[in-house]
Length: 116
Length: 180
Image (cartoon, rainbow over all chains, first blue to last red; front, side, top):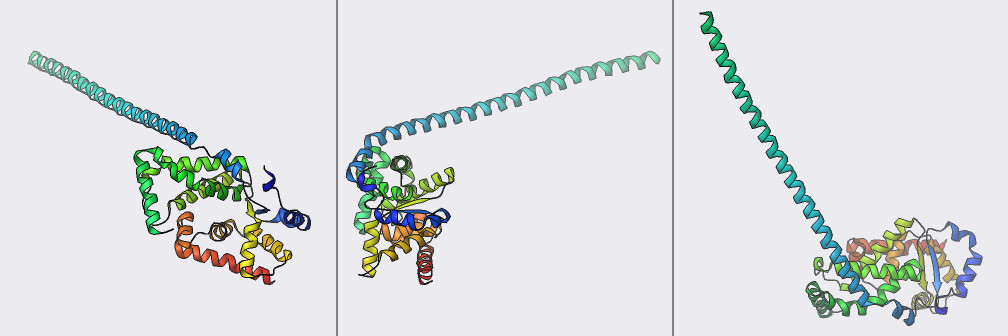
């Protein structure tokens, strides 16, 4: 921290005089001679870094979107396959039941004719 | 800031929607102000640098969502910065630290009264410490950042009359405490 940002004499006196109040206050307020100097601002100003971060964030967002989209497609496909297999199994069962049904019907008619 | 200047800045924003590198002039113009604004609420240089960088990154990432609202683009940066600072304090659950420029405070005082004692200045700072954060925030924007009520309303996501009311309530509270 530069010299210009150091607490002022007023602040030091204030801390000394109102020490108890400081701890009880809702907010901490410090008085500075000057907030931030030009050199400090220049050190932190970096537009190319911001653009790089933006590019990274954009790629990350796209990857995330692609992942979520793929996941959604996969879930939909799996659900679709499950639905199809369910109907196929049901159809197969019905067919088997029909077959059994005809066999039993044949057997009963045969029994009846024998009794006669 | 005139309507024409605001429109010009929105032109830059529109260009940034297609080409992010066009955002540069806005970054260069407002970096110092946003950095100082965040610094006044954190009193920590490294933290300020992080939050400031995060502020501009959020602005750039969401630039396509930005619409003309009749306030300068800077108000949007202030809004993001304010949200980031509040988010940080919510995360660390610590007391908010305001770092005010003594020269600015003295300037404000001398506007009202030529002769003021150091005792009064100290008393004011002491009373300000007891104000709720939302009131301090509004006072900071109004008197230290020179924002009008329309901008304050936009930054704090409240109505213009709400911003006025909050400012006057804060001033009224300070006045009453002063007279005690």
